[in-house]
Image (cartoon, rainbow, N blue to C red; front, side, top):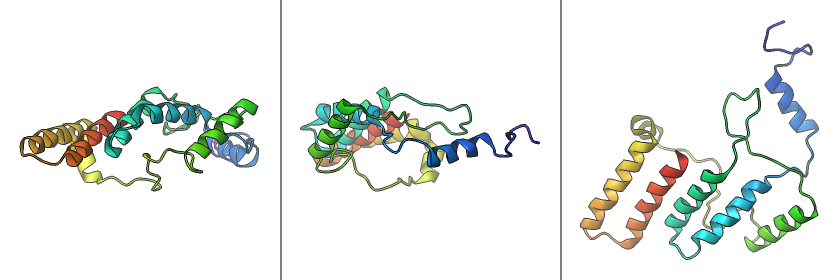
Length: 163
């Protein structure tokens, strides 16, 4: 038997995935993410959408816990809990306030994002942040619209959040 297999012959990661599919409580949810997103939502009200996205994601990602399982190859799982009555009420109130969605309107839900990977790999997130910052300065000096400047400021903050 290989060292990364159990007596049942399944790799621990596969065993954990099967447990999550078969036995994890179906009411398990990500209340921590919801709480932090509501905080972020309150902070970004009144800002232009690109700044809402950048500042909101920065607030969320800067504060969210990082859950790691001993068998994880990639880090990125989300802490989950089964809500009690108070947590369920919080969840329902939040979804109602966000028009039936689990995320605020400023946070787009377009599925998984696909970056222009060649540029990401070439420049890295710090390089993308620097590029957007320099581009914002250049465009401000050229008299570009506030909407464009806000978009570039939001991009800078988004890259900072992802780092």
